[in-house]
Amino acid sequence: MALSHIIIITSMLLCAHVSALENGLARTPPMGWLAWERFRCNTNCAAYPDNCVGEKLFMEMADVMVSGGWKDAGYKQVNMDDCWMAKQRNSQGEIYADPGRFPSGIKVLADYLHAKDLKLGIYADFGNYTCSGYPGTMGHEKDDAQTFAAWGVDMLKFDGCSSTSDEKKVGYPLMSKELNETGRPIIFSCSWPAEDGHVPPKINFTLMAEICNLWRNYDDIGDNFEDVIKIINWFADNQDVLIPAAGPGHWNDPDMLIGGNFALSPDQAKLQFGMWAMLAAPLFLSADLRAIAPEYVKILQNRQIIQINQDPLGMQGRRVKTSGPFQLWVRPMWGAEQAIAVFSTSTGGDVEHFSFTMAGLGIDKPASKYEIYNIDNEFETKVVGLNDMITVAVNPQGITIYRAKPGTTKIPHFEYEVKEELTFDIL
Ligand code: GLA
Image (cartoon, rainbow, N blue to C red; front, top):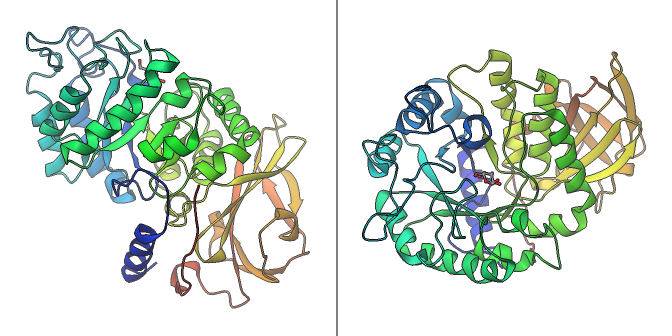
């Protein structure tokens, strides 16, 4: 898409009426790297100098995000998680980084990232303690927000351990307000739904979108394919509640990308990445990018998938059908384009086939013809009618994704022009 179109779309989206946290941030799902799933709470730098939670880890990851092409692919955030703090606040009650592991301090780390055109994310917890037992923010909301802003932090993941449901109702809106009052643009990621019942009536997604840019919905991901499928199925089972909650500036967050670690095969990593794109999910890699195998780099830097994820319409995809091991999903995109995913949880050894029609996708006001291509084969565009059968070959525990747009001219997708006005209301 030409830069001028991106600018037009962006400015139209900024004007669209959305009842959301209007800090102007995260108009498309944020992208970056997050330490937690891969590096956990490893604080033993004496024994594990290369893998402990300390400034060396984040600086090295930033270096490789630039040299390894991650930044150019759109991954800009370098995010710390739990266990960065000293075990107690200082004598003035201020939060500060463990001086042994962060000898230069967080401000220097932020400057280091900013000099590379990257951004720093930090972690705190509303309760008395973080989930790993470090100092919580309860009672220090203003001071911590000011501290983060003074350091040059660009994003805050705000966890909810060690606080009650009633306390969260006060704490999350308060922290949102305090962050806004710093005057620094800070993307606000709330773990409230994950920590408090996941869905209504405990969680009010209208409020969530008013105070947070993204929110962790569900259980923590671990390094296994079962978690990936469990999360996808939970998102499908709750899609009627979750889809209307998401949009530019406010996103559901199914947790980190784990491709490139120990557990997922390339096909499974591709499945997770493709489905996170269909879900309009924040894309946070949690792998050791210093040592990731090239086939995973290719998967996680796939521009077609990133383009689907970053689609400016910002509409979350929907599961249309399950059939045996297959699931069929569709995500409406800008310009009446559709992203279509078919994945399989089959453990059979062979490629299996699944068929669908455009008419069967439940598209609102479908066109009579679509130009459609498999993103692994983007120059083989076909024109199909609404009832033409499209047969997909899917690897066991793999995914195949198509893009389809109205028309018959087989224009390569990246050349067509955006002409329509965008009018929509979210929540
Ligand atoms: C919770 C969160 C995780 C991680 C840990 C840190 O479990 O959901 O993502 O931040 O806390 O302790």
